[in-house]
Amino acid sequence: MRLVKRILIVEPDDQLSERLGQRFLDLGCEVHRAMTLKGALEALEPPPDCVVLDLTLPDGDGEMLLRRIRSERLPTRVIVCTDAAGVERLKALPELAPDEVFIKAVDAAAVSPRETPARR
Image (cartoon, rainbow, N blue to C red; front, side):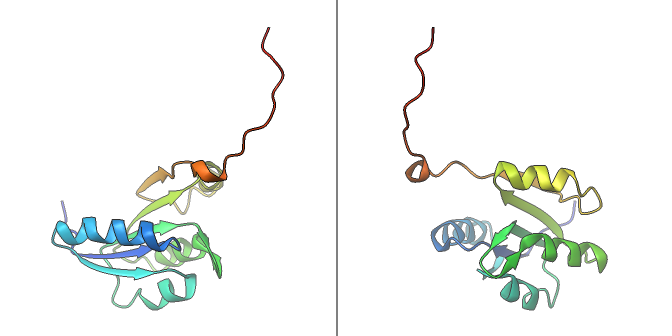
């Protein structure tokens, strides 16, 4: 197994990016962070050993970054962290095949209660 040394975290949520980055720093990795597609594309030189990628970025789609990594055959593992809809999108694009996929937890603050019919 190849030792992962250089990590690129592509995540627009600064707090999550910081927590992930700290975890990789604790493991002895060199960590680079990008919050946008543009920043992530610029950070591909030199190619990182691993990219932790959110598909939803403020200036574009993380799928574009994954597509570039695959088309250029970069020696980079890709771990996608996305919501359930992102997982379904990736299933329709087998040529992009990330190395791992993690579904992000639901943001409890975004869930609003609503009335539902009583169960019988």
